[in-house]
Image 1: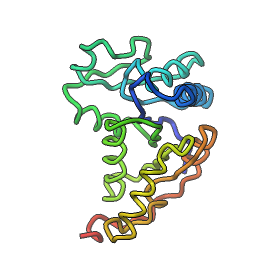
Image 2: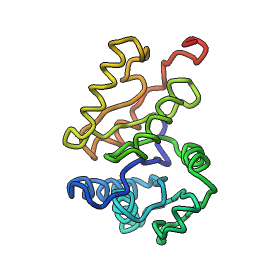
Image 3: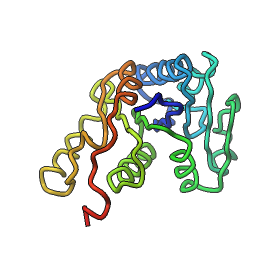
Image 4: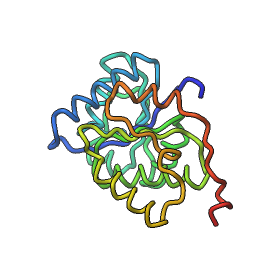
Length: 194
């Protein structure tokens, strides 16, 4: 795959989380900046989102936030970004983030992170995009989810091997190398799955 120019990152918006996760998010933001990769994210100034954006900005990185009006109105939007797009609702937000990204990264997070991650994984499974996705299993955070997905696959509900849909890494340092070395998809077409 060619060099990644932009990465959409899905992650938590809570500050009441493991400090190691906040530190990792900041480190990843800095890494993106140092590698000249644009950060695309939900535009928040709190939680992992805020830490990651701060890391990118502190290192002179390029940042694009996409936030719905109601969250911007709650004053949770990051005001230091290079670019902030304010959209009407959550669905346009997610669609715009996908449009702006060359690849996707999923850091620890809650229900919103799962929503965003599952949508982009499902779209890949259906052949609606062929952009690589990395799930970052920091300290085993996503292991229960990975176990559930393996259970779903073993019961015939997921026909694609998970490794064709998502690359799983354990460390921040492995994200960009995994995205940049991801092979083109060998997924079945959407009609093959009907």
